[in-house]
Length: 409
Ligand code: 7TS
Image (cartoon, rainbow, N blue to C red; front, side, top):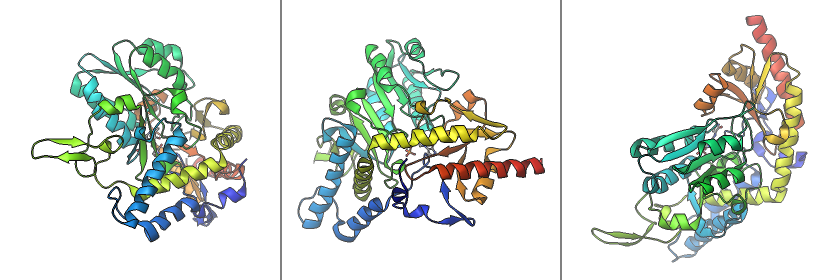
């Protein structure tokens, strides 16, 4: 277990909500930020704020060093070969749309297939739906096993030599399942398709190695891993990125502009039109420093321990349904559940009255809700600052909610 000292580095956690000490269990939506990240952003705006890549004055050079230094931190974090392969975006959604609009529009034709799974987040569904519609391609779904895991046999059944793109989430934001990306990538490549990975729920929680995964693209958001909102990353293999056209045009991304024709900067800047997200990238760099100091292995271990404890304790409550695999090793720190007839929004409201923050709804995964045959669920998600005591508080809160609604019903 990670210790209290670490928890104390997140200033927001030490507050009361509705008269109770806050228990924040909504990190899959967005994580809280450590002081180190808040300080890095504050330092940037206090001392270094300037625009980047203009190379004339000292503040401009400092801002450029901060921004490009963050890119190098991301490269190391993902074990990418080169910073040319690291594109800063607004988040996972923007990164996936970039792949669909640039790589997808250039490489997918009528009759081709794009393959995703039933568990995807809307951000990894709609860009492909739009691409499939525009091109007359087919969007196919890999079915899930009963416990919400992906079997490689089903992947082999679905991916064919007509498939051009396979796009799968690394970790589910609903079921918490850790998907076998390396193996799925191999199947995609055997069929001549590229592999896109939605890493929004993986990068914050486990060691990602894009070289070992061998995926073609990997997308994630900073705000789920201690960094501010508005910054994310698209990793892409240089061979693909070199051939791809930008999707945003304007300042910063150009080399030469003529009256009718223009040329683009080299990688990665040709994909970063406009003044970039400088403070965000610096904050992301600080968040990476923070996570690497703890060690991603320790983060993952901590979440497995919390998930195991939560699965065990939550099962004590009669009438609870927990979705996803029973084995905590197969999942990151996400537990999605329903409590008898209580609507998840009502449940989340009673928990909030007791200082406990969970999410309720469809979690931007409506096809998965349909697959689970529910319209909504409640979800508790953990991060480095959570403790077993937080889970005890959740279980107490669920008991209070159950009693409350039993009386009402
Ligand atoms: N992919 C997955 C797997 C996600 O969990 C999310 C956000 C996204 C993509 C989109 O990330 P964004 O930063 O571009 O918005 N997931 C959630 C969630 O589970 N609750 O709120 C946001």
